[in-house]
Every structure is written in structure tokens, then in C-alpha cells.
Image (tube, helix red, strand yellow):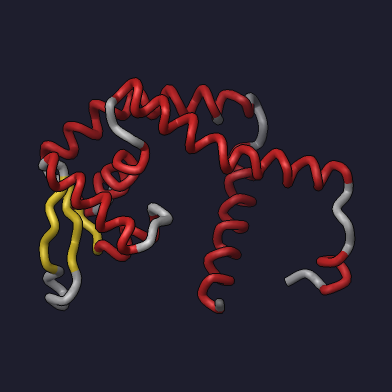
Length: 160
């Protein structure tokens, strides 16, 4: 952890520019990708994202609380999204076999098919709005730095 002296030191001009640019990206990027997803695939980003995460797990299922965490939603927010996905037949909620108390969200074959239909729109949007702007930058290094920031935020959330 940085010292208190370092934490209270004003930002340099380049640090300030970086913080402001990142703040804008964090607000605008999800809006832009969501608009593309709704227009091009008829599927909002809030529904695409859980389908994507479920497709990547063994058995295509996750505890609702884990799915909420990876999607950066509250459990109640994730429940509302999963209810919408259930109505389309793309996800099913089943009792957890491990303890019988919690619920798992499970991607159906229809949900996987829907995800595969929407994937090209998501890919094109993410490339256009984000990836293509980095050219030959060190994406691996940037990824590691962002993962450290995200991990630090998760650790601080555990202590709050």
C-alpha cells in the first residue's frame, strides 16, 4: 500500500489526464457497446454478459451469487436479469446440488444459440470502441495493470 504522503501528493498533469480519460471510458464504453448490442443483435449488454459467463463455465452453470459478482451486479439485480433470460428460455434456475439452499443459473441450448448469434455484434463493437484504439500498445501489460486495480478494489470491498 502507498504511503500517506504519496496518497496526498497532487496528481501530475499526465496522471490527471489519465484519470479523467479513464473515468470517461468507464461511463461511455458500456453505453456504446450496449447501444450496438441492442441495435445489431437485439440483446442488451446486461443480458449478453451473463450468457457469456455461463457459456464459459463447466456445465454452463454458476451460483447466482457468483454470476452476480462476475457481472458486477447485486444479487437482486442479477435475479431480475436471470428472470428476463428465463422468460426467453435462455437460462434456467435450478437448486444448488451442493447444499440445496442456493440457486444456480444454467445456460440452456437456446441460450447458447442466442449468445452465438449476438457474439459477432459484440466482437465488432468491442473492437471498434476499444481494442482498435490501442494498436501495438502492450495489451498484456495494460491487462495486468487493470487486473491489479480490479483486485485492489475487490480487496478493499472485503474490508468495507
